[in-house]
Image (tube, rainbow, N blue to C red; front, side, top):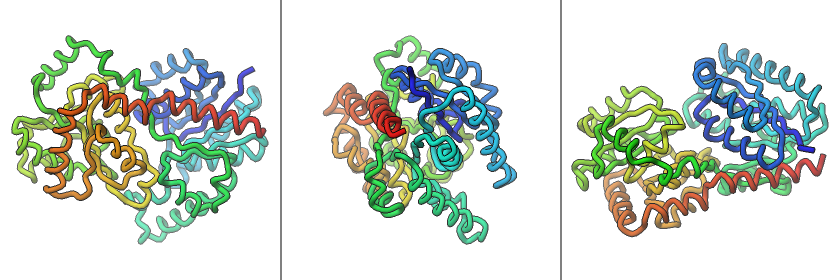
Length: 413
């Protein structure tokens, strides 16, 4: 008989993040013998756009998906309403299904799951996904000079400590965060079952060998990118934590080495911000492509890349972060320029084929990184870079660790 897991997530399955970092994991764990009921909060626009495809996948893997409407306005009231809807949905499901474990993704979901875990007397897994309250402050979403925002921060730091105390086990995205978590919640925390699982990648999906040249040629033609063009690529959001100005400055230095280089920016955000930055730096927009894409299109777009970049604003909370894009880049055989101080990134770049670490945001460091990755392109084949990506970020590694902690916690039931 399969163990039944209630998975609670504020991130929706129809979100790009949910499609990359929730659904592949749950499908993989379903194949490993677990039954899932998945309660998620869905953005209405994305739900309308992707619902049918996500439903087909859930049906194929026997996942019982129970979406509710994502709501965060008015502030506080909207979030409380959403949590109540998720609780109501979970309670109704438990009457019929009798769960063996609650897996909660991030803080708000774990707040809800902790109460259910206590009522049902079943174990709960706190999949923390980073230092949430500190990210809100350091990302500029909460201004602690504002008394209300300061109250939010103080409240959720207390909540954070209580969630670690109440959980049966936890997941950290990074090894770098573990000492800090012990400071937050006490050294006994690390005696609880836990696993370090970075944001992993379905390396079967992100596999350059699976792409057809005729389709890639059509894509190059559509984007105006010749086959031998040196392309620097950035994938993901360009707001809050990410550093588009610094990345554009590095690209301008790249043009001194490779005058015809292009900057391919794959993002669902409007291009106006990039256009304004390019104008301020006197970069001709004919050398920049800003392209929106869904998950299915990402491998083809990434295959056009020569190198990739990931600049994340360093701060205290980023010790607990794992950029999703890192595994996707490397799995496609693309060396990366990244900055120091983000999660376990420094450890990753002890492998020379990974790319180059930028230690300061200035022209000297940009030039050194560019020279490094150009040398890497000469020294390492794409296959070697891909193998590194698979060794560090392969989805199967994540599934093995999730399966291990699931079984450990269920045995304690």
